[in-house]
Image (cartoon, rainbow, N blue to C red; front, top):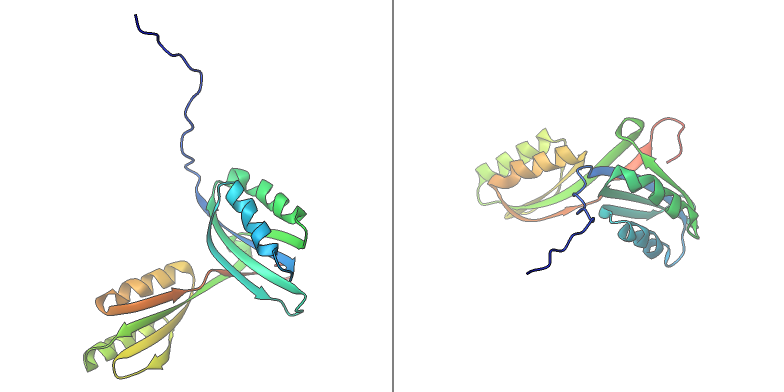
Length: 180
């Protein structure tokens, strides 16, 4: 007679709430602060999709813009944990309607003919981009905007031979008098 194993454990269903969030973290400009912040996200199971760090107007401080994907349920806890870290001045979540969010992409294209060059320049112009390098064999285009615009531009350049793309993460600034 075989034994039947009975368990009351119910396997966890994968969370369907995997939405994107943008956080702005204002920190003291000290070594190790980035590592401590990213560990909070890793421990909570959030994936960091983009990370932009730059020195502020005052060189003693830096601003981090962190694009993450994960469940909204644990987001408030992450914000609280990050805010408690040494060297963190504040951590704020930004919604699309209360902030300006932009990205930038550089796209290098091989150009094989005059017609290709003309077509590429028209696409760059359509997306309000700039040609930042131009040689007889290649073009480097710079396009800025929201994620959807950059995705569409890259798709349009799919008819060309794309040598490489370099894409920044999202940068966020709160609208009006709100703090970023």
